[in-house]
Image (cartoon, rainbow, N blue to C red; front, side):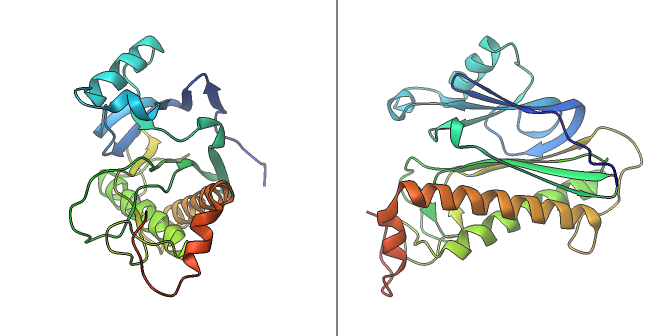
Length: 235
């Protein structure tokens, strides 16, 4: 098997650019150019805590950053996590490749179903890219698998929700992007019994695991808190 690689990730000053290598079918709930789009790049913009205080329009800020970078059509993500801490994981099976690039901040941990609460700084952003095309139906399924893998990695850490103290499944502001080459006749499904589902799940799980481990090394008090048998909210 010949080892192949996707285009390299580009780390700029306060920007992380994932070049997809050409037009891709992209699905996400990204702040800028989210939804179902055709795009060739996914871009993170790093922001300081004070830059998003009211009355700042976060989407307008991000659009301006993308325009300044010469990438106005890119799918855009915002994070306060240091972009130098990004994680990239690739897996190959035959000629098929998947890559997950992720930034992981956990200061805004919540569990699905928690009551509405105030948003805090700290989020998980990731893009999972495949080297082969997917049908529109499979693209939706791919987003579900990536989301499930993100939650599995967070649950493994056993960290508590800021709202309920129960084991968190993610943060309140996570964003997940999936991308596959824009071409007809793509794989019809991307569930757990498919190669696409396997590669998506494996890369996202490993990337978020590594990101969680890195964040915990920088925040040892959070690790200590997981040893407390009594559920408690994030301070």
